[in-house]
Image (cartoon, rainbow, N blue to C red; front, side):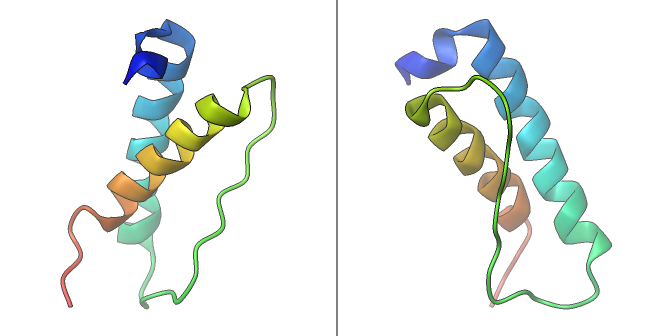
Length: 64
């Protein structure tokens, strides 16, 4: 939670969540594995938050 107080990470997390939602909507199959890559100067903790935000968006509207 404290990482999201950093404005830079917050903006990346919001963008990552939207990209995750877009990625899932654009697929016509259910993937078995998702790999999230990013580049830049994020620390490992900040990168973890961005990856989790992507997965949140990616899995938001899925059901088994």
